[in-house]
Amino acid sequence: MSDSIERIKCLIIGSGPAGYTAAIYAARADLMPVMYTGMQMGGQLTTTTEVDNFPGYPNGSDGTAMMEDFKNQAERFGTDVRFGVVTSVDFSKEIGGIHKVIVDGEKVIEANTIIISTGATAKYLNIESEQRLIGGGVSACATCDGFFYRKQDVVVVGAGDTAAEEATYLANICNKVTLLVRKDYMRASKAMQHRVDNTPNIEVRYNNEIDEVLGDKVVEGVRAINNLTGEKEVIDVTGVFIAIGHKPNTDIFKGILDMDDTGYLITKGKSTKTNLPGIFAAGDVQDKEYRQAVTAAGTGCMAALDAERYLGSLH
Image (cartoon, rainbow, N blue to C red):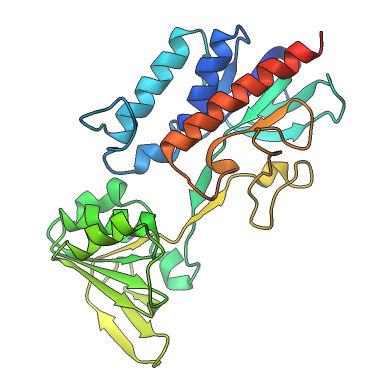
């Protein structure tokens, strides 16, 4: 472990709309923020389809390009953006206390305030055949891997907005998309359901789930099961896209910060304050309700303002 300890006013853990917006506001408030981006620089938005609903982008934007815009703006105001992963934390419980984190298992950072914007990670079904074939036809990111299944048949698993978005994206490049929905209805917004219903090469199968992903080294099909009748059917596909939700990236904070039963950080009232003074949470790591880029950016702004006010209250 490094002997040198770096002391900073504001540390931002994780990038994405929340982290970069927090960085913009914190930098403009002269907090001289340092950001560690995590393994996925730019967060989940770098794996989504074209972003059409973020204000200020009238013609839409590619998610990766948008996050590069956010990063450039944060850096323009003086944010120190670094690639690295926070591997452990030691947070103070005292008002005005110094918080310590370890980056990449060796670098020690001490910070007066910390903004957590570590986001969330895609969930899988965790059946043996699915796990074995990840990278061989099983994916959780249509925009990352959809290109490889151009003009082929694929399956999407899920019932929410993510599943609907993945299915409609894939429908543009694939021959046919079969959407397996475990219940007899979709949880997606009405707008997304209408988009699915109006896409002719998407077939929605309700009360269906994957019994097994077929294939040795690559996906050759799936065996779907009707959970009402027990009837099983083989669907010939070459790609399987899992879109069943996300897990918040909060494991290193367990036992330290308050979180709900699914691991999302709990913030106080309408603020981004956690249960520890000087520690704030923004974006999908604390929001399982909306999970939108614009709401994540909004909470990033709030976190930076909360951090600025916290530091001001210490004087």
